[in-house]
Image 1: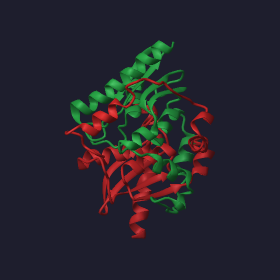
Image 2 (image 1 turned 120 degrees about the vertical axis):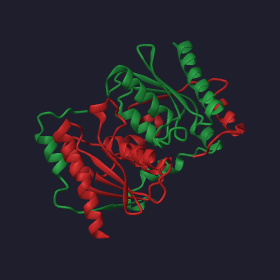
Image 3 (image 1 turned 90 degrees about the horizontal axis):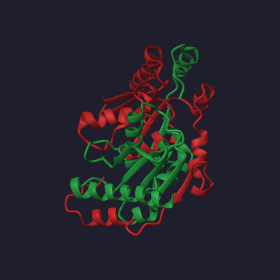
Image 4 (image 1 turned 135 degrees about the vertical axis):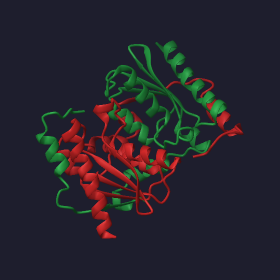
Amino acid sequence: MQQQHYAFIKEAIDMASLNVANSGGGPFGALVVKDGKVVGRGVNRVTTTNDPTAHAEVTAIRDACKNLSTYQLKNAVIYTSCEPCPMCLSAIYWARIKTIYYAAESKDAAEAGFDDSFFYQQILLPANKRTIISERIAVDNYNKPFSTWLESEIKKEY
Amino acid sequence: MQQQHYAFIKEAIDMASLNVANSGGGPFGALVVKDGKVVGRGVNRVTTTNDPTAHAEVTAIRDACKNLSTYQLKNAVIYTSCEPCPMCLSAIYWARIKTIYYAAESKDAAEAGFDDSFFYQQILLPANKRTIISERIAVDNYNKPFSTWLESEIKKEY
């Protein structure tokens, strides 16, 4: 088992290094593994595809879901070259992945200029204390999407 | 200005309601606006495209970045039918959006079965207290992606 962990984590690290070397993309790679098999792979494609959400874990989750034709990766695990940022951690929760295996720690990423501790701190704060302003616009039909959802006979829960 | 806010937030709400009515997709919609113009639109496409990361805010950010050929939406704002979940909030930070305007509150979403308070609580916890297990795999070359990045002459910072 430990040997398999090493093989997968090394692959994630190699993907991360190659992503920088080949395209100048962010130094992150991730694999989604289910039943001992790789079902999805991803590298950071933020600058190479103009998508600020295209972190390695997110692209690996998208790839795995596409390959398995599902939107939930129950019993899958993720191997990532570095501890996930809060966006990726939340995406891992939404995907129902059960375990995160990582190599580098957040402090290593911070030393290379990728400091997500600010984001973690911001999320912990109440909305009115964050640097991004959050303002409610009060409109009468604010609940219409939810009432439509509750009455819908074609809705698909997730 | 307030009238413009109403128009945009109503459009986000209408998109959210129509997404349920037309496809049974999640009851969420969002618009990215820059210089008073809509530059990106998104609805929740989790179940309709098998992508657990395809929340309305994320799809709107992806759309805006594609339309503007950029990975940073500085000075843009987002109008969303509901307060963002932690994944979307983090994506909004990564995209450098400056203001979030929303209609429904998280408690309204929770009443319709979309309770993200658990995710917020989980992110606040230290990694070893979360329900998703997080384990470091110690390998020698864990820092290789970052050293490759720091030495790279083709890297594009983000």
